[in-house]
Length: 143
Ligand SMILES: [Zn+2]
Image (tube, rainbow, N blue to C red; front, side, top):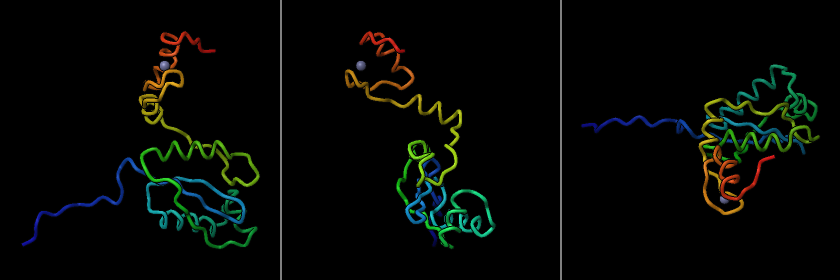
C-alpha cells in the first residue's frame, strides 16, 4: 500500500537564484526562481529570435550561439543581491545589463523590516528605525 503522497515543490517560494552569463570578457547578471537550465533556454530562445538587448547583440558579435547561466547566489535575498550587483556594474564597459532591477513595494517593506547592525554600537536595529536610533542614542543628526 502506498503511503501518504507528498508534493515536493520545485523550489521554495521565497528562494531564488542570481546568475551570471559570461560572453568573452563581458557578463550579464540576472535572477530567477526557475532552474538555471530552463532560464538559460529562455535566454537562448531570445538570442535566436534576434532580440536587440545588449546581451544578445554581444553574443552575436562574439559568435556565441549558446548561453549558460552560472549560479552565484541561492537564497531568500536573491533580488537584493541581484540589484546590488547590477547597480555596482551598470554602465561599465564589460557589463551587459541595461537597467537596474525594479523593486516591489512589498519587497521594499520587507527590507525595511530587516535588522541591520548599528555601525556605532553594534546593536541590531530595524532598518527603518536606524536613523531614529542614531539620533536618539548617538546624537547623530541625519543630513
Ligand atoms: Zn547604535
